[in-house]
Image 1 (cartoon, rainbow, N blue to C red):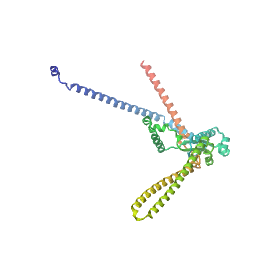
Image 2: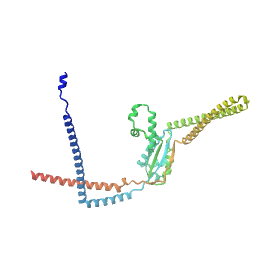
Image 3: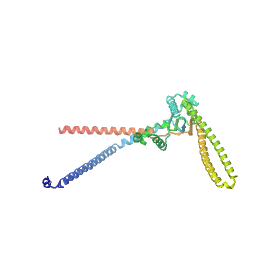
Image 4: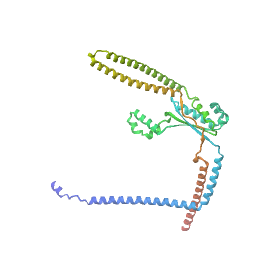
Length: 358
């Protein structure tokens, strides 16, 4: 056994050197192919750009003429379009009324698209001209990134499942969350007249908004707030009574003889500590009462208006205008036509060369 071990030749480094050499050569070939691919791609793109510039140079007059005519036609068509004004208002929904509000707005917009001026006039109390000039009624959630982050943070704190933590990141949460769960929304109205927006404001947030479910939610919420308010006021009255008792205790202790001076100091210290605790509790209850008063005030209405409709401004979107769309469309058609004609010439030349070489 020992003789076999001694006769075994020592391992050489030649095979390792050969393997490293092959590895470096493979890496070199791969890098060469990669750079060759980049070079060919760049040359191909450059060739396409040069050919496109040649086509434009040859047909530049056609492009200029078609472009000028398209701009003129687009401007003419836009000038014939009626002016449309738009205005927005921001609202805050209470008691889960957002779904009902969205349903109502969708219905109103359907009446506008159908041209049902009689129904619109009866609903909003406007005249025939104002109803006939309505172009659309829209609504969308007004949710900022901060609101979404707060909602995500609250969702993650209320979720105990590990699977949710692994699968639900912020971007997925934004896509899956229902925007109607947020309280702030923006209502927009488009009209051919500027004098209609203020007339619609109150009607949009009051007509058929309080269904039976919302009415129950509103009654229960207000009832609970009133009950909590009465209970807190009773606690404040009890605190005032206890504070009076502690004050009497301090006065009573102060009238005792000097032989019990130590006990008086200890008793006074205890009374003062209890009075400080009562004072802190008094402050907390008072702060909560202020919150309840604020909630009662803001939740008297099912929908609160955070910002009113303005007088309206012209709705302009250059990218949706004929002045933008028509030139883009006509120039694109001209370019496709020229490219097809150039392709046809190339195919004819190729076929002719093929026939001559046959």
